[in-house]
Image (cartoon, rainbow, N blue to C red; front, side):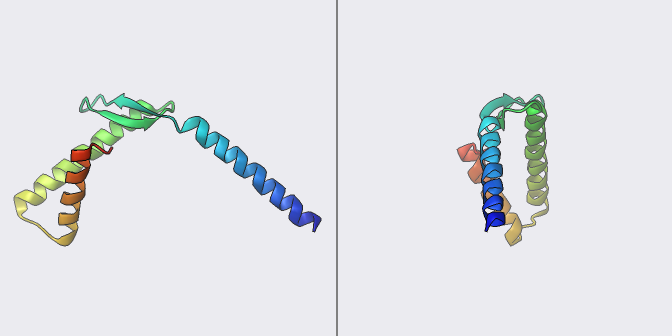
Length: 95
């Protein structure tokens, strides 16, 4: 019984520490990418500029992929879902 109580206390302490860490470092800020000059919501961490540039690269690669599929007239179900999801995100600016 003492071992069980000890394990529960240790798990509770670890959970509290994890939640504190997440709350401390989960603050979102807008960072302007140096690649496409758009702003992205990024966690406030030391590598926030790299994260914004990485997101800009992902957006650029998705654009290239969509343009290629449009040019080749490839419209499978997966491509249609990608077009739809990307269109929704660009209209709502969810990045």
